[in-house]
Image (tube, rainbow, N blue to C red; front, side, top):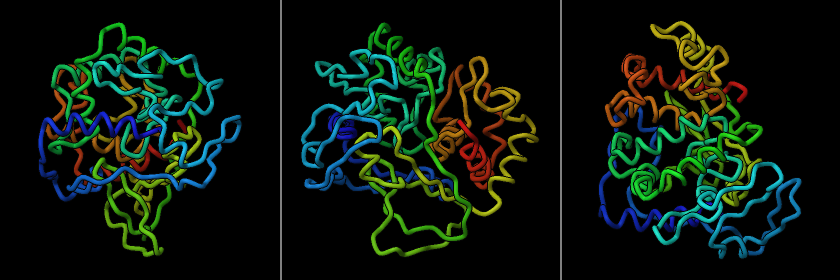
Length: 321
């Protein structure tokens, strides 16, 4: 099923590093949700039937739990995936790209979406992982650790084929809905870096953070490309973020375009996962991401405080993709 192949491959990578404690500046810890101990993968309710609107496919949770490859629910909505995206390269321990990033490139709660990014940018980022210049500011954070472990195993032809595929997907669905609030559902973090709402309906103050959860976690776990996330942000964060984005010392629009949908080598920012955006800014600010690809971002990232990052990513996530 959708994420099982990712975590299966990830466990192999993590075993070579051993147990490592995660640490992070407390003010930005919300962007790196994690439980330090290893945790079992989620299991879908075996007797529940899952379906995606517009798809002829129907599976029970039990069937999906046993699948070794991700389900492509809506193949008519995207080009034919190359082998790396559809099946991976099992002989090298590389799982299918579609199992983590989705066949429509939508991503997951802890994994960035790729749709809407230009092919050269995706190629560049895989090279950055392979070179060791891109990793997380949190030691042993699973998604970055996994990508760093596999990037060097890919041929240049595979890299270019996957990048061309994701960049050619014809349209980008909204992934996240932004809600300004004073209180949020109490959540728990999974080891691989996402949050789920705790049962019982308890609420807690949001403080200065972004809380990202799936509207329907089980449906998103199946790989449904229409499943959406909710980003809870502090009140007035979107307005404050708009001011920072448009009028900071180096406005984001100067590189990423007037609509923040990317221009030239600069990637699109509008409508993206806000926790991922916050990690990208902080990892560059901290020096965890370095090299030519991040050089244009080093100055603007270094000027943003953890508190300002909350506002900036709230605004960016609120924009139409």
